[in-house]
Image 1 (cartoon, rainbow, N blue to C red):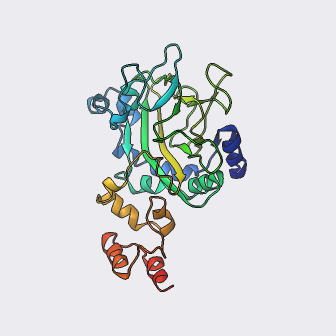
Image 2: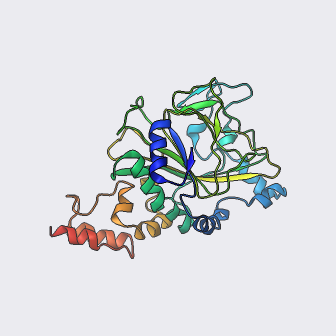
Image 3: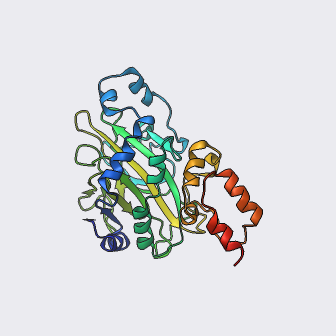
Length: 310
């Protein structure tokens, strides 16, 4: 279930329900972007040395209120099967930072062309939308990260339609090496449900991408390595116009400086991942293209302008 071949990985995702695309993003690009992580997270050395500011980072509420546990101990919207000693805990979901980040390299990594290309192959369409975008850091000792097996029902307001052309693709891009001891997600293949066959640990080097379907049983596991840490980027896609699927709202941050710089660097196809109308769409007028250039200083608006006369 680990491969560097995009077509093989796409087929595994469709037929087995999940895959780890090994080295999908080159290590050098990951390492360059990870230098910006410390604008948002304490370094592992600071946290594990007992630095008061680093420890205080994890004394706040979850960045996302949807993760607050119910009275039964399960997160809202998750279908789960309990395991002895496993439970959802609010502190498991500390360490989320929502896109866009105060770091341009991380913002560009969120739509890395290799990840987008894999998603298009797996989903069988070029018209996809990014609907979940955040980075997530875990450190040994913050909490017990052990969870029950669950399916993510909090991405869809209606029951999932489990047929080709209807699946959404959930995924984690590894920003650090995810090995035994630092919380590799445990995953069951399609047709297996807990209790069942032994799960597989989705390990992978930084730059690898874990992709899974919404009907796959999976769970987070605890970090047991001494002074361990694990960082990843949530990158999930859906088919265009599947409005019943969603998670993160990008419009609420589209007037922030980090978004403006990011948007100015995007091609029309990249902005379309967020739902922006492509060149040639009836939405666009000459005045709106002018306004686009004003709003996102430096954007190459030629594709939108050239399409007006066609």
